[in-house]
Length: 480
Image 1 (cartoon, rainbow, N blue to C red):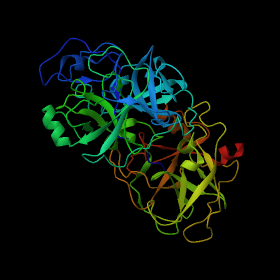
Image 2 (tube, rainbow, N blue to C red; image 1 turned 120 degrees about the vertical axis):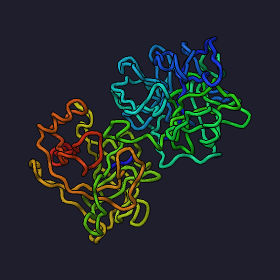
Image 3 (cartoon, rainbow, N blue to C red; image 1 turned 90 degrees about the horizontal axis):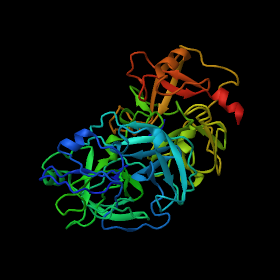
Image 4 (tube, one colour; image 1 turned 135 degrees about the horizontal axis):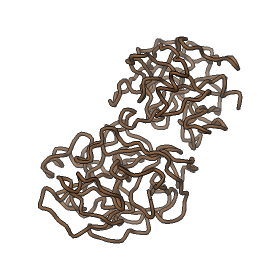
């Protein structure tokens, strides 16, 4: 099971001459892409129609200072985004609303939006299912890439997601290639960065008159002068390396009484909202596991729990490839021998990560499996820590077979509630052809997968669709 910011996203646009009276002079911060009609005519009027934008009051970022940022471009930069993993970016929904994935490329690993680093094609766009272009609520989307990024943990690095929203008054960092002042017509060549402080939601809502929801956070500096601006949309707002916000919208740029508004990553990044099984599978309808029932279970973690893993020998554990693709072994540890992901047990340093050589080949998430070698050896043979037996090579899991899922993932769709104690649930295997049919428009089900779930739902490893797609270990392990 894996659990999966709050970041600011600003759009690249040039400011036009049109102005509306307060409270209507409110703009999204994108550039170069069509703006939904609701934004042109209603409360969130957007007079910008160009391709330029910057962080206002910022300075040039240093190499490696914002390694998770990516520039989105068609013919030129129009929005920012952040790296979730080697195959996934996160941005603002308004940046990509109505756009074709084939028209967008992402550039990472460079301080310049127009050159250097790695540039990859976007393959698929999945916006928050509840995104509202009229109110800019739930303004978040994920982008799946056509080819994997090379993460070096220096200039190209995945961002950490938040477990809670940042406290009022706390300092955050916003970065982007947007305009350096409202009305500017030229984008900066180099990445800009600036520090802004979180503004209480009630204060922000009062300043804007209304419209600030729990899916939004606000940030500014006293007296104004520092803010995201057009062209920064979709970019990151971070706190201590954690993505707490995505640049979304604001009134003009850097006005003293009007903080910048960001998507509140902690409240909207879920499987239901993003529609992606990679990011947020979780146990629904399960119960607390008992001591000794799952001694193979480990928490794969960075600063906090991220994915599940299972001990298969004295020095090896097994997990999903999407949990570790492009990740340095030193950036993750395993915690084993405890029912609590946050305490107890023993932590093990990881020496080597081996993803399946055909991971993602022919189909997204195909052969989604990886091996983890630890530096020492697991403490085995106890009630709390032991090896799990692998399925026999060449065997299959028949439809109707009851299987057990364990994990520390979310307990409910769309709700940021995580269990302290390991959860477990029994569900039946589903006939593969039925699973293929149900998932044909979401994710191709291959022979390296099987499915499990209840026809009526309610008990599952929580994902967007009613069935749970799992890797057939007995098939994929033959290739290692």
